[in-house]
Amino acid sequence: MSRVSQSTERKVKEAILYTLYEAGLKPLYTSSIAIELGRDKEFVRRLLSILECQGLVRHVGKRNSRKKCWRLTDTAYQEYGKLVSD
Image 1: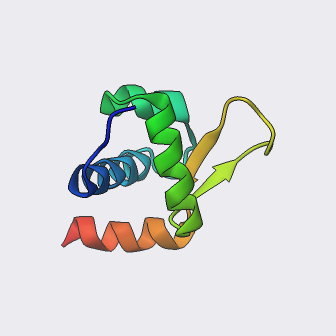
Image 2: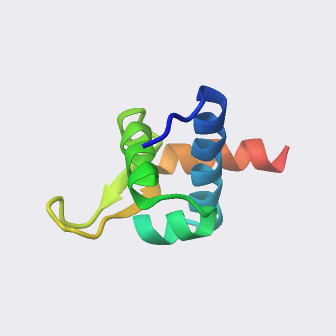
């Protein structure tokens, strides 16, 4: 896998958060997020795991499921809404 700069990684994280915000509180699969952003599923999954550790997104559904759904946490959704509306 090629190296990605910190700024590119930050921009993709922001794009992931925006994609989940646009979906509302409806969960999205990792693959649908990756397709929306035009990125590799494994790369998006790794970034989603980092965002989950930061408390911005959460995994929805069975923990051991092959397909994972993600959504913004309630507090992240409210805070992101304030940023977007300003």
